[in-house]
Amino acid sequence: MHLDVQDLRNFYYRSTLGRAAQASIRSTMLELWPEAKGQSVAGFGFAVPLLRPYLAEARRVTALMPGPQGVMPWPAGMPNVSVLCEETLWPIETGHVDKLVVMHGLETSERPSRLLDECWRVLGPGGKALFIVPNRAGLWSRSDRTPFGYGRPYTLGQLETELKNHHFLPEDHRAALYRPPSTRRFWLRSGALLERMGMQLPTVLVGGVLIVEASKRVQPPRGSVVKDLARRPIKALDGLAKPA
Image 1 (cartoon, rainbow, N blue to C red):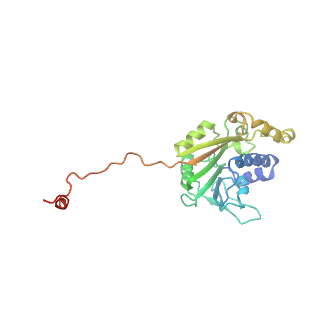
Image 2: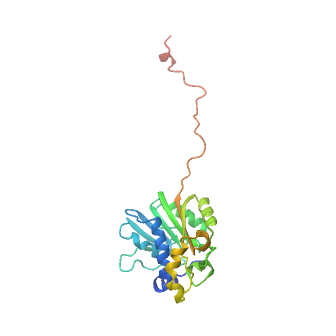
Image 3: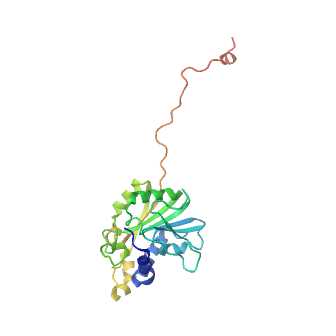
């Protein structure tokens, strides 16, 4: 089930732990996608904490929020780009998205297979998607104090297999949120150090979230081309080629 948009907004914009989580995930995302100049960028679920760096230069930014979650106007102080939509039926034409960010969307979906089909549909040729999900082996998926403690957590292998089954090609993966999901002052103050230390450790062991970059894979036509030769060729012009 999807979390309520008010709870997500309060966590990311009104809590110290949420703002730290936002910074950690966004900095990791920008390592993969440093810019989106002239491109169409979309986010599904509650991806708005990550989309702000693309507002200035992207051709279009769209924040898609599923109906069960609810919607909020975003960004503050600027023209609204957030849209309330059906989870598996987005108001975007086929093949019109260059970059897609999915956060708090896949793990909470009751129809993840159809959601991935919709992700594939809206991506254009060469389009790429970032899927951000709770890490089953991490601490954040075990605590319901944060949004990552809800829904279905994934291992890296599970997520990549699911993407391949829906015609995506996983190309890169990262992790973020190496700090524990605690609001105690000690952990909040040492969070930046833990993030730097965690980047030196295996991704699947300590990261609170997994971030997988995948491209849209278009299946080529199957089979081989067979020339259909006429069994009885027309002989009306044989006389021109072979005069008697």
